[in-house]
Length: 356
Image (tube, rainbow, N blue to C red):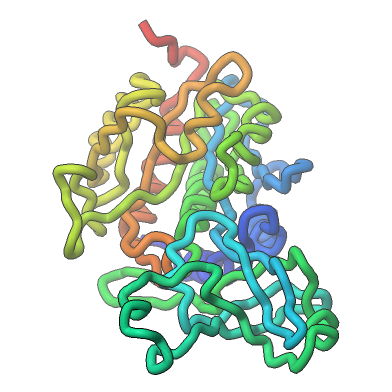
């Protein structure tokens, strides 16, 4: 299982506020941890953090986990000091109602509460309608615009004001599991690889802007810089072991059932085969997810970087995605880190990733 120090690092990482485009706080936590064992550590213009082990290795492997989370941004401040927000990433506005927001303000964090017309004052027909962003405002306790503008500016980002929690059965809950857990796993895998490295150069990257970047975001920039022959992307996928989920449409992904290895479409069949063989050889529980088109992860950008990168996708079953309380199993997290580290030890210069 994960060591107590690794779990403590994970919680620091999860609690750092870092919405897409504003990932600095979480990236600093990640890099501080990487400094303890990586051979080198760099940051690029997009804010990607890259930790390297065995820099003289004969083949380069990129381990990618995006470090950003969904959030909000200050759109407008009215004369009474109320804040109006727009989404950063994909939100269901219903989960914002009644929540606290932690803004990254001019001189430090600013806490606000999300307001909405009370149900008592709504017309009967309005009670049946879902809230939209335009129905909501944020109250930071200001009495007028000038007072609010001393603390917040247009374009200041924010996240839900919540902290990671331990749950029974080796589970953890946080607002930023997607995909801070992937950034954690790739660094934990690098740590394990560093303890007994193979012949490959391995770069773990905490990449930026995935939640907003249909153009490839930080991951595409990172892949060009690292120039890997093979990449493993670590993200979350929908756990299907809770009510009102149709497994026929999504597949079967149980929390505690191990990491999910995706197969199909733009993913390398060679990487998939090696991942499965590695999981079986080390008796790592896992499942397979069929992907008929794009993956909606960084794999979509990385696999077409430069002359092409043999890319695999490993996912963690996640309950309640894009909510204040996403939930994963630490057993799955531990197994994913082991799978990645052992995969990296398997790869040599003789490994042929050519599709034949």
